[in-house]
Amino acid sequence: MKKLLPLGALLLLCTLSVNAQKKKNDVLKQLDAKAETYSEIAHTIWGLAEMGYLEEKSSALLQETLAAEGFSIEKGIAGIPTAFVAEYGSGYPVIGILGEYDALPGLSQEAVPEKKSAGGEAGHACGHHLFGTASTAAAISVKDWMKANNIKGTIRFYGCPAEEGGSGKVYMVREGVFDDVDVALHWHPSSANAASAGAALANKSAKFRFYGISAHAAAAPQMGRSALDGVEAMNYMVNMMREHVPEDARIHYVITEGGEAPNVVPDFAEVYYYARHNTRDVVVDIFDRMVKAAEGAALGTGTTMEYEMIGGTHELLPNLTLQKMMHDNLVKVGGVTYNEEEKAFAEKISKSLGNKTLNMEMAETVQPYKETAEAFGSTDVGDVSYTVPTAGLGAATWVPGTPAHSWQAVAAGGMSIGSKGMMVAAKTIALTAMDIFENPKTVEAAKKELEERRGKDFKYVPMLGNRPPALDYRK
Ligand SMILES: [Zn+2]
Image 1 (cartoon, protein in one colour):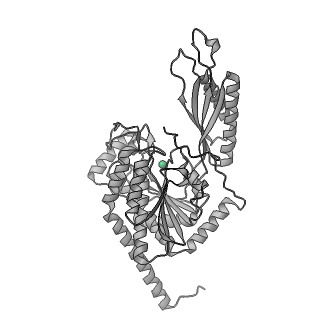
Image 2 (tube, rainbow, N blue to C red):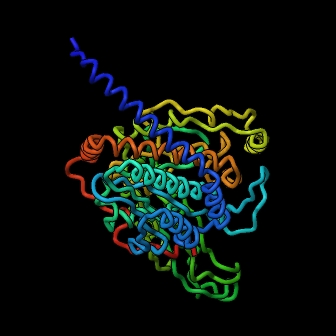
Image 3 (spheres, helix red, strand yellow):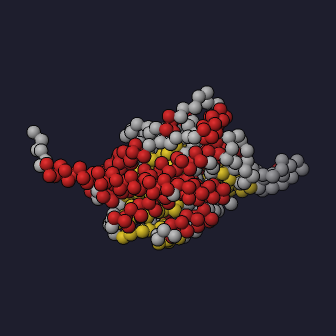
């Protein structure tokens, strides 16, 4: 038989929980009151649309916002000019909130429901302008709550550049900037609200460069050696290799340089490759075989080859101890409700995607909690998740049914639909951080889970080796 609590203790517990709920409601109200300010910040970053490692103005804007709120700022961390950490408070526990702000090349788009370039080089097709801003908003609201209630501990915002292919966080993990963090929280823009266990594919990417000899392609082809032949021979071999790798592996490439004119034998050509799988050992194996294919291609075409590692990330390690807390808070916060104007915008976006019906429930409600997830993309949060207990969520910043990396994602992210979804994330992260500060035992449970999941022999080895940050990969 369960032991019954005395009435006095029960009443105390009830009062404590009512107080905790009131504090949470106050934080939610404060975030609502500043929603317009954060929307403006996100919109400014959306307009800047700066690509990986080039996010100087976006990073500076978030730094200024946090500094004005009393956070101390350390910028240029891990050898990356646009990476920074903003900190408030001191001592245990240390909660880090991750933020991103890089845009994607070639996806410039106005905030309208039809495809229309804004005339720029890049666009926020992954919603990282919302990601960075909402995480900033969460950090500030937690700071306000800590200050008002004399809460011990440290809240940090990590400004993480170049998630899209640049593996920014990997250098930060490698440099140890997360080593004294107890818990890391993050989120990602999405077309639904969900805080289930996350998954992401391990990834290795590199640019393979072939060097040949130029010559007149008609008058003296025998004098030339085509660098493009090297690229094509490599691609041929890698495409044959697809039959002999695990079927859930992903290999993709683009030819970034293939010569200038057909009548000149190209003396330089470059192909940019990704290899992905949900187990990083498989990725390492596939990548090593890709290098052999490149070496063979160079040998057979009389060219020379060198390759540069560009990115490399671990798969994402879930932490269910934290994840369930995140889910419960997301349920408390709830989804978003569109006004008439937003509904009309959403209908048009949905039609442009070829969807027959617009499933508004995706934005309005929270998806049921799941402890397993399938991985499709990759994220450098994976490396953080192997270092620190990490939990995240997705919030509906895009019209239901919108895929990431589409013009439709840029469009919704540039108007009120994106701003509304972003506040769901800011609130959920803030409430989760509050729960952790108030129940430090959670930190120990989460750390224990991390140790069990990664195994006692685990040693962090960055997938991209010891190269310096690829600061010019978008130049
Ligand atoms: Zn993204």
